Length: 178
Ligand SMILES: [Fe+2]
Image (cartoon, rainbow, N blue to C red; front, side, top):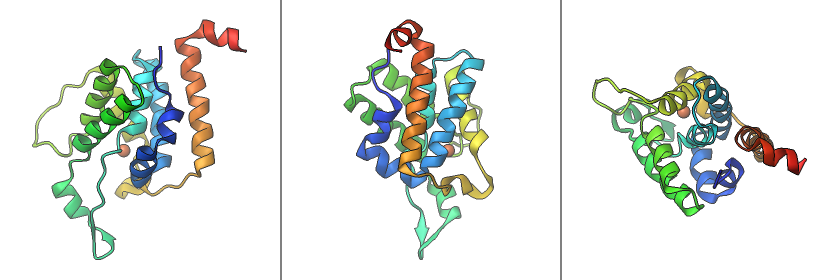
């Protein structure tokens, strides 16, 4: 059973503020990639899409003299750590099951290793799907963070994705509601 939908997440002011900062178009595209990959790697589509949608919610703005300072960002960024905590708090507030909220938070924490000292991360299938969904939508120079999408279109796309997730998770319920 799904406790929180993608559209509920989209409508929350915290998402509007922080996911928009890192790029709503990127977040929606990643959620779609995660849905497709969740089928291929047999992971829960509800968890994968929510983690992918929220994976960049922890971004901070690294501006110097009105311009994005990539070196400053590279050196000081902790967006995965921040995002993991922020997404967890948001999900719990919206009534998410604590076990699900923890799994999503972990997938967000591990979607990139850019903030870690050199090492090797062993990802579980859900974490792997979320990391892949992100890299599939990345553009050189971080351009994916600036791609635009209207609120209306983003909301419509998330409603459509919610329906697809529901039809996979509760096929019987969907039949009755049609
Ligand atoms: Fe991303």
